[in-house]
Length: 511
Image (cartoon, rainbow, N blue to C red; front, side):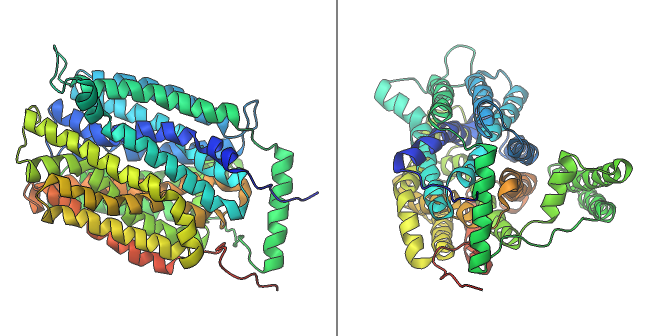
């Protein structure tokens, strides 16, 4: 018999979201300190985006696979929890090893492993909200995740500063290792917290059985039919061969253009990615034609091409939002230390003072994101989720652009308040809008595919930002932050065209 999902209590939502505290703890340590580790190990400023390419490429591959697998997993631990735990174990080990990397290439490889592991834990958490909560509680569920993301990141981002100023842990490298002790201990602590937080969610939250999920999904479909709103759209079999050839051709043309204009080697990352996607489409077409059936690859690519309309609209907004964020994560340390502190010597005390302050700034924007997270559902009730998200992105864009006009590092805290507002919304509003447009049985797969539109702008940023900073901005990393600000403002404008099909503010219209 079809029945609706029960509403969960505040503490039940708290427990099911607590693992994100650990995930973001590790993610924030990575964002705030990996560029610093790369520079300390000898990376040039224009090499940093290419070294960071591991993170988005790993997410592009891992998340849809994990999403598809978790959609079809029903084991002793449930549907999503096995992936939470596996990713936490691997990520914790990578976090502990990262600051002990002896040379640059090992650090880059460790980042790849670390990001893959974080993605294994992170992706099912998004689908977890869709699985466990009724439609009217999903905005609150994603806001709770934003709260834990912000809280975890506050502590993690400021941890090197806290260890130095509160516990007198040195910022000067000791012995043969070029990495300061305060950074090392931050990663050791982060690895432990990551694992413990995910274990809390695994132990305290029980997932619904397949039979219960089937009944809940049937009830949800009945409600949509009664209200005249349907999430289902025509599902078409894609022409894999035609699409594959077009994408491969596009990749070849971009590669030849890159070679002809003598662009940076990093641009080949983008052209190779286009061709690789085309090749995957051809492989999927061959598999479907020769064997007459589907596998995980065919299913994921078919679902990608058949994305709901709302998801396509949100994809464009996500593209410009995350391009801005990736520019910030890569270049805030270099921009602040060179433009405001006036040094590019990664081993100097002044550089490390500036780099530590960047960690504090990251803590501020994450702290503000945590503080405002529970106000977002309230604001959304009065203005709508779209308007809330647009206002937040505008504040973030202005915050990033303002870095260029500020010369006192303490005033950058005000800039980070705008970024924190945007960050809280980016982590909740797109997912709250998206979830109502997705077929429940493909929640994990589509959440993984949605990650493409986080990853693709990051790959683009890693491909072109180094070239732009070196040749267009004349090594002024601060201008990369200004570019990120304009990108986020554009995202704020594009929210207007998104159709929020499951907006709670819409009056129910009976057919």
